[in-house]
Length: 398
Image (cartoon, rainbow, N blue to C red; front, side, top):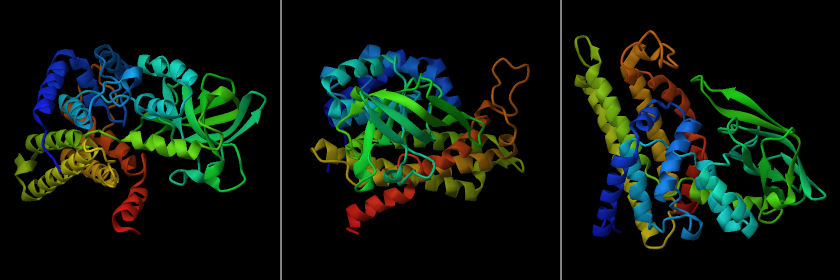
């Protein structure tokens, strides 16, 4: 198992660092630093998307014929790593990292030719319609119904926790097209226009006061039959294929190391009884434990990367990394909020253009929001309990 980059990969790493130094605008770095939600605002993400598209580095996981890079797994990992180290904003994954690979794997030629260029350009902005009230981790119980009438599907039902649905003009959905047989057999994967009379987006405001997620209600909404991906009743298979791409090839550890460094900086700046908080043994211990856990996550990512370089699949390491990274993220945001104390209490949503400066350092502004938003990190993208079940089956044979 090789856990070191070879000479060619190190040269590629230098190329990526140089590109980011020359092409990543400081205002995007600043915007990413102020983001408290899982994803940045649409305009921030699309500006960075356009820069990467111009370079030809936007969709490294896609085949070259559709705009991909032909990078090996190590190059993809290095690119993710250095984007994190440079403070680049996240890209919105619903189109680029989720639907795009699904279309390439299961779409017709007409679907690929129409939708893939619009994903790359940002002309279509996608959201994901999976979870429903009462159907989250147990997606097979979903009830949103699509009934075929002529050459159209008529959709009725509700999706929930739909990130950026208030921005999106398209949604890819799991819908129920058949109630006979096993629940998984009656599910289909359908593309639906958001800009129609039968679609209503209802905002859900998070504890942090952010509007990132929504409830989407379909009331006799329509979708052309040629917007069915795969065969009718094949949606469960398509959805499982999508999950292979949702977290693949990324470097969560890099962003977590940066978050730990910021937390240590807060602990150096903020005094308690006349001395920095970082001078207290209890905080030294807590922060050191966070660093050790981040290193463990990094080596888990590298083991997964090594398997992929040799032609294998990530295996249970991807589930391990998901649990390790989300648990660590939650603990980092908790200790950061603990350190800043009462500076985390005021609600300071937007100080741009205000006559009054922030209460305390600008670094304090995002800590409470991140703490609140990332309580959900152990649920979305496959809950902690679901990941443990995957690990139990793959490693222990249970």
